[in-house]
Image 1 (cartoon, rainbow, N blue to C red):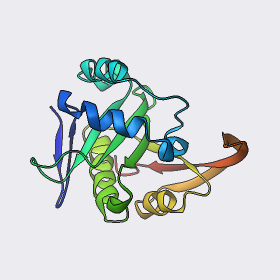
Image 2: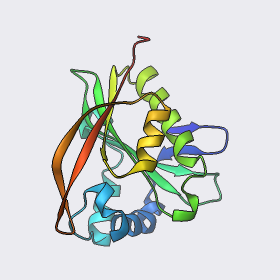
Image 3: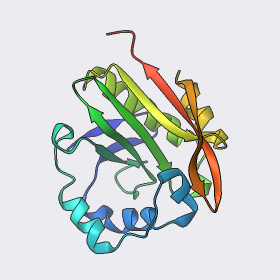
Image 4: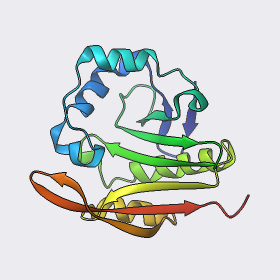
Length: 177
């Protein structure tokens, strides 16, 4: 099981007891815009997903980790590597903190820092990227804090509540390997 510890949080592999948390986060319509979710998920589908969450990143091409404060607290959010491409040594990054009150509390920053280090020094990735809605100032600030650069904007990329919105692509290249 993957567990990466920071100063105040840790990120860990998903467990079967995360079912209700993932069910709640996947069905929270207030974050569907950032997760690009279109339809609700059933507990059955989430359970099936958790049963396959043990797959290696090389097999599944993704890695989803729970963000936690300590062993006694449930997950606060999720951080993902997706579109894992070992040939070109890159992956996309996504992060969501479920409760509004836990956002802007340095939880996402610490989780992202841990994931960047894991990606560059354990997976030997050369680059990470993030697709961020151009209006999502908090996520833009989070990723630029760690050196991600805006490399372009996809115009009218996402249809949200009948309005087309731009999506920016941010990229972090590991020049230390």
